[in-house]
Length: 440
Figure 1 (cartoon, helix red, strand yellow):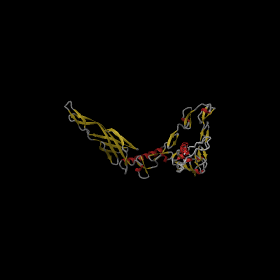
Figure 2 (tube, one colour):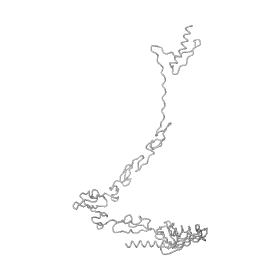
Figure 3 (cartoon, one colour):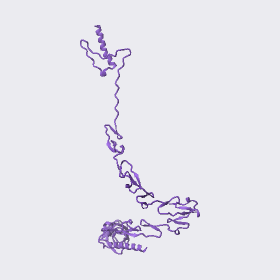
Figure 4 (spheres, one colour):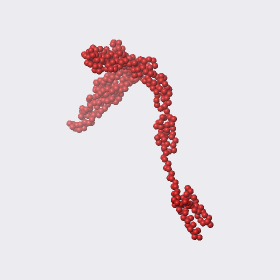
C-alpha cells in the first residue's frame, strides 16, 4: 500500500516540521505545556522528555553544590565534626531537540525556574547529594553523588483548539486545518489522527469495522488445519453424526458421508432454526412497504401516532390504547389532579378529580370526618301502679292550713306526679288535720 504509506508519512513530516519551527522559537505565538517531570539524573546524565510527535533530551551537564564547612572540636586523633553546612545548589542544562538543534540554560537554582524565551522552561525540582568532611582541622566538606530532578515545559504553538485561529484545530501541538476530531467524521475506511483522516491499513482476510481493520481467522479452507473447514471465517472441526441433533444449529447431518455439513444462509436477513435457514420478512425499515416499519423482523402497522385513533399512540409499529388516570386525547394523556383520596393530603378528599377540603368540625381520619358518639339520656322513672283492690289512686298533694285561714295549694311536682316517697309525706299532714277536726 505505497499510496497510503506515502500519504501518512507526508502528513507526519509536515506536522513534525511545524513543531520544530515552534520549538526553535520561530513561531509567532504559542503556549507552554504543563510541566513534565523527568529525572533524577547525575551530572552528565540525559533525561528524555517526550510530548506529541516530538521529544527533547535534557542533559544535566553541570550540578553545582556549595558544601560549606562543618563545626569540628577535640584534639588531634580524637577530633570530631558535625554536619556539613549546605550552601547554594544549582544545575546547568543542555537541551537537544529532535530536529538537531540545541539550547543551553545555565545556573538554575534549586527550586527556581529557568527560561529560554519562546523555547522552554526548566524548573529544578530537587538536587540531592552526599556530603562528607575532608579536613578535620578546618571542617572543609565536599559533595558527591549529586542527582537532579526537573520539570520541563516546552513552548509549543497550541495545547488546545482554543489556542488556534478560527477554522483550525490543535493536533500534536500544532494548529492545522482540521479534517476531523473523531473517526466518525471520516469515511468508513478511514480513521482520525491529529485532526487528519487516514486510510485504514488493511490485511488480506478481514473487514473494516468502526474505522478499524478486523482480521478473520480464515477466508478459505486452506487457512485451516487438517480435518477442519473454514465456515463463516472460523475454522471448524469436522464432526461425525447420525442425526441432525449431533450437529450445531447451522449444520445438517449428511447421511452419505456421516459428517455434519454446513448450511449456507439464503440471505443476509434471517436465522437458523431446526438445522435450516429461515428468511425474515425484514431486518430494517427499508425492507418494508411505505407506511410500515420493521418490528420483530416483520413489517407492521403504524409509523407515527397520526396513523392511530386519538385515544391511542404508535408503539413498536402497533396502535396501543392509552390508559391511565387523566384526560385522553390527541394521542396523549393529561393527568387529573387526583383519581382517589390517596392522591390527596389527609385533610382533603378527591372529588371530581380534584383534591378538595373535607368539611368537618371534629377529627379527619383517612380523608373522612370522624366524631365521637354522644351518650344516650337516662330513662325517666315510671310511677308505681295502684295496689290491687283499691279503687282510688294515691292521693295527690293537699293544701296546707285551715279552712278559716285559707288553704295554700302545694306546688305540682315536676312531671305532674310524685315519686312514691313524696306522696306519702304529702298525705301525713292531711291525716293529722282530719283527726283534729273530728275531735272538735
